[in-house]
Amino acid sequence: MINRLLFNSTHNLAKEVAQELKKQAKKIVFAESCTAGLVAAQLAQFSGISKWLCGSAVTYQESLKTDWLELDSNLIQKHTSVSPQVTKQMAESVLRLTPSADFSVAVTGHLESDATEQGPLAFVSVGYRKHESILSTKPVRYLLEADTRCDRQWEAARATLNAAIEYLRFRPSVDPDEMDWTQLYVEPTKIHWGHWI
Image (tube, rainbow, N blue to C red):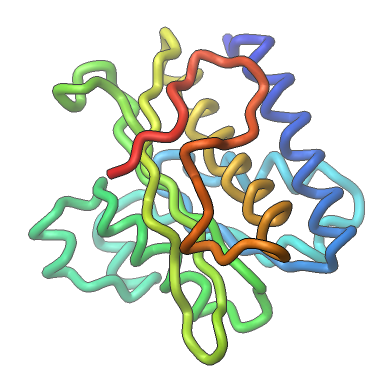
């Protein structure tokens, strides 16, 4: 069963993202791995969101990351599919493949408690258009501390939505490359926010 506080805070954050997308008339697309579509599903609960939510590429397996998102297989082999390098390329690729979107957010992660030496974690990166180029922010690592795999997946979804709201709120006045992504807006949760790679 999902932690109620985590569920409510994620839902509320998704609502804020939906409202901000409408306010700014900006369209978003996601590239989701460990969240398996959960992020897009949260946004899709709100009426009228189809004007602003382009969709989500749920690329759980490595083969789909290369086939659907056209990621460099050598990059995956070198860094693994759950890495900041791959997350960054996912954000750029899904935006390049979605001309109607104004920006993207990509997430990858390990949800198992013993997946890494640091424990379960997620990587999140934002893709954006600058002049004629498609760029992405430096991926941020989030340590996930929920007790169950299900709750950790919701933590990763919150991290993804949080990156979207931060980009929407600060984009007009701050270059994404200059944003201090270690100072993210969050409601109290167990997530350790803002660890640079």
